[in-house]
Length: 338
Ligand code: A2P
Image 1: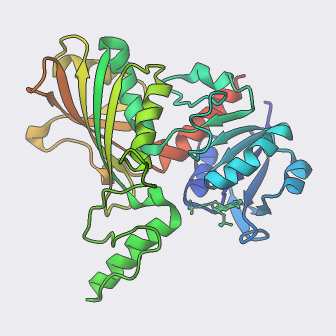
Image 2: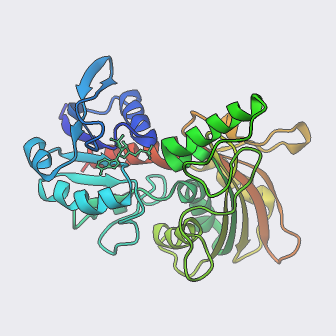
């Protein structure tokens, strides 16, 4: 079997560590593994499949020295802006989890269940992994758009702290500990307000149009991934004190008359989707249930009585797995077929 020289950039981070785990679970054909991170972690050891690897500092010199063929990257936008083109020039194909390249016209934005063919058209050697909240929505919306035609989407998200990396996770962990000891929550490292006992309607930076950037990402990426600029999309993205798993309330308006049962039938057959929809028996997906699973879970599928043809639904997935690491590794798996 052909094997590949694989780099994970950001290998010490929240998503990078999960990428290593998912690569191992899927028996990805790695000939040589190269964990890259910043100067801070260079020389530290990480483990992969029972073997120890030394973390490599991400520098131009090291990229040309090691020349990985597949580069899976989750090290933030500025690191990706600087180093993705260098990895590509050194002969690698980069799968980047940051937002930096997602809307670039020469960079495909790929959810393997939705637009796998786009992964093979990467003229500058970079493929973007979509935003975590967008990925899980796409796995559900794309089959519905193909079946019925979607006119408009309203997203409201409830996003876990792990989406903000190790510092976001630590904010909740330390805050919970402090509160349990009767103290007030310590100063937040990542969020603009305490996250313990709170709900914060601010993710990423504020844009001139009044939206925070996470909301704009969901809007733009939905149109790009489905090749459907005509779909109207709006979003409110909210950080909640949950460790793993993004939950989304999604309201969809269809082009033609569709019943909740017809929606359920399409989703029951959709790749990567699990329908959990028996509200009378308290069956619907939750963040805890979705944690450490790779599928996207859907429930609470019900009619929106305020419009001609619309449904509301509740969509949950593990933001670090399907929302980041699993989706990136699935793209890498597609590439091995190229
Ligand atoms: P490091 O641990 O050396 O700082 P998270 O999103 O969980 O905070 O993780 C971010 C990841 O991105 C970490 O692995 C971090 O490495 C890595 N990273 C941050 N800045 C750089 C950089 N300039 N070059 C390479 N990797 C970086």
